[in-house]
Image (cartoon, rainbow, N blue to C red; front, side):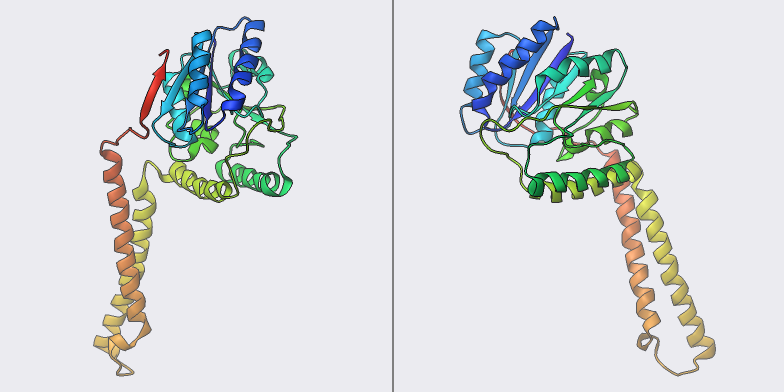
Length: 315
């Protein structure tokens, strides 16, 4: 199969039929073999009924329905697990991503041999204050922290070689950082394409300002995981040893001073150096234990169940 189109959605019943028809038209005009995988992330409207109706008239339509809302990362993870195309295309269900971009994205993966191509919505139709400016700040921070030189990490329209999606683990809220996850997994040929951004036609956005706060917190997480995720002892153990050593030096100094000099006659507990020594030794021990526990956790079997599927169609 040439292309798998993976579409996570939440309460987008009004746009699904139009989006499906648009994608099908593009695929058929380019003679692609394809599948469209809709992942209903706990919608409370008639989105699933619409997906079932589409699957009855088009066998290329497949569906996954979560038992409740688990988030976009989990929806993408489920879609990636089922996808069979040589190229995986992800897009949002709100008609703000243009399916006409698919053929060129496909060629960049197949012909130009990119591992991943991310869309760049250079001209946006979102609110400048609530989305554009925070998005620019977020993208700048992501570039500086991750080393991946993309202008738009948040763009839902992306293309992947199938080897990428089968070898990365998208969980939590890490869908924003799939290019970083791909880079950390060894897929370094990451490209970018300017894509058309369209004004929302139906419904309203599911994201508010809180996603940027969460995004920056996730950015710190992924920076830590990329640097020390597989070797937490290198960070926490090193900090622990340094702090314990500082405290130990202070303790030795206080002991020698009390035994041999005792110039001022004060008790050790009356001196500020005592509390510095005590605090740094305790903190150093805790950091060391945290690193040790991190290593143990890495070696334990991890539960891979992060979402519960209620129904599937055509798999």
